[in-house]
Length: 236
Ligand code: HEC
Ligand code: HEC
Ligand code: HEC
Ligand code: HEC
Ligand code: HEC
Image (cartoon, rainbow, N blue to C red; front, top):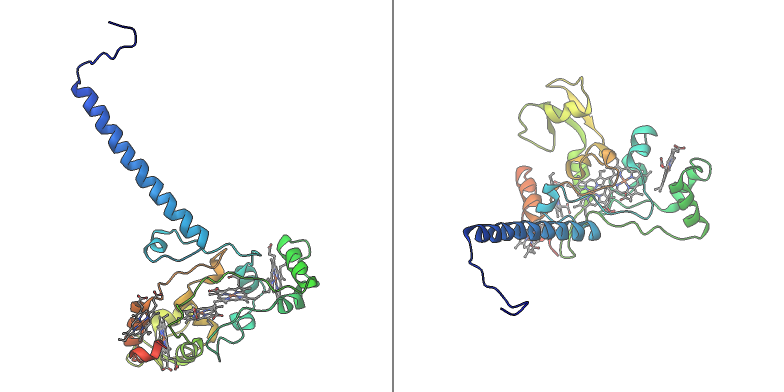
C-alpha cells in the first residue's frame, strides 16, 4: 500500500452513534445561534417583538442618557404628569424638553455622569433624541387623554365592576390606598392610571414595554369597558 493511500476501514456502530451525536450537538448549536441572533436583533433595535418580550428578551432601548425614573418618582416624589405634561389633555403624553430638566440640574447632581451629559446638551442647545419605547403604527390612532379621563377620578370600591367609569375593584383600590374598604369612594389620580398599560415604570432601570398593546389587547379592553370597538375608533 502506498503511503497516504486511503484505507477504508469498516463503519462501526460506534461511529454512527458519534455521528448522530454530532448531529444533535450541531442542531443544539444552531438553535442556540438562532436564539442569540434573535436576542441581538431585539436588543439592537430595542423592539418589543411580541412573544420575545414574554420570554424576557425585551429590555428596552439604551437611551442617550440613562434617565432614572425611580430617582425622580420614588426619591424626589415627582408626579408622572410633571414631566409628561400633555398626558391628561392630549393624544401624546410628551417627553419633557431639556430646559425642564435644567431647572433642577443647573444646581443638583453635578457629580453624576448623566447630569454632566445633560448640561452639555443644554449648553449646546441640542435636544436629546430619546428612543421611543412604545409606538403604534401610523394607521392607528391612540389618545392618552380619553384613557386617563376614563380610569381616573372618583371611583366606588366594589368586588365586581359593573360600571367601569364609576367603579374600581377592591384589589386595584388597595394598590392605591392599603386602608381602603369596600363601599368607600377613592380618588384615582392620573399618574395612578399609567401602570395599567406601562407597568411599574419606576422599577425599570430602562423603560421597556410590558403590555402587548396590539389590536387584540386594545379591543379586548375596549369590550370589557363598553368602549367603542368599531374600526374607525382606532384607524384613520
Ligand atoms: C423628571 C421627569 C420624568 C418623570 C417625573 C417621569 N418621566 Fe417618564 N420619561 C421621562 C423621560 C426623559 C423619558 C424618555 C427616556 C426614557 O424612555 O427613559 C421618559 C419615558 C417614559 C416612558 C416611555 C416612553 C416611550 O418612549 O414609549 C413611559 C411609558 C414613561 N416615561 C412613563 C412614566 C410614568 C408612568 C411616570 C410616573 C410613574 C413617569 N414616566 C415619570 C421623564 C420623566
Ligand atoms: C424637580 C427637580 C428635577 C427635575 C425636573 C429633574 N431632575 Fe434629575 N435629579 C434630580 C435630583 C434631586 C437627582 C438626584 C441627584 C443626586 O443624587 O445627587 C437627580 C438625578 C438625576 C440623574 C443622575 C442619576 C444617577 O444617580 O446617576 C440624571 C441622569 C438625571 N437626574 C436626569 C434628569 C433628566 C434627563 C431630567 C429631565 C427629563 C431630569 N433629571 C429632571 C432632580 C430633578
Ligand atoms: C390604555 C393604555 C395606556 C395608558 C393608560 C397610558 N399609556 Fe402611555 N402609551 C400607550 C400607547 C399605546 C403608547 C404609544 C402611542 C403612540 O405610538 O402614539 C404610549 C406612549 C407613551 C409615551 C411616549 C409617547 C408619547 O405619547 O409621548 C409616554 C411618555 C407615555 N405613554 C406615558 C404615559 C403616562 C405618564 C401615562 C399615565 C399618566 C400613560 N402613558 C398611560 C398606552 C397607554
Ligand atoms: C386598559 C383598557 C384599555 C386599553 C388597553 C386600551 N384602551 Fe382605548 N379606551 C379604553 C376606554 C375605557 C375608552 C373609552 C373612554 C371614554 O369613554 O371616553 C377608550 C377609548 C379609546 C379611544 C377613543 C378616544 C376618543 O377619541 O374619545 C381610542 C382612539 C382608543 N381608545 C384607542 C386605543 C388603542 C389604539 C389601544 C391599544 C394600543 C387602546 N385604546 C387600548 C380602554 C382601553
Ligand atoms: C381599540 C383599537 C382598535 C380597533 C377598534 C381596531 N383596531 Fe385594527 N389595529 C389596532 C392596533 C393597535 C393595530 C396595530 C397592531 C400592531 O402593532 O401591529 C391594528 C392593526 C390593524 C391592521 C393591520 C394588521 C396588523 O396586524 O398590523 C388591520 C388590517 C386592522 N387593524 C383592521 C381593523 C379592522 C377591520 C377593525 C374593525 C373591525 C379594527 N382594526 C379595529 C387597534 C384597533
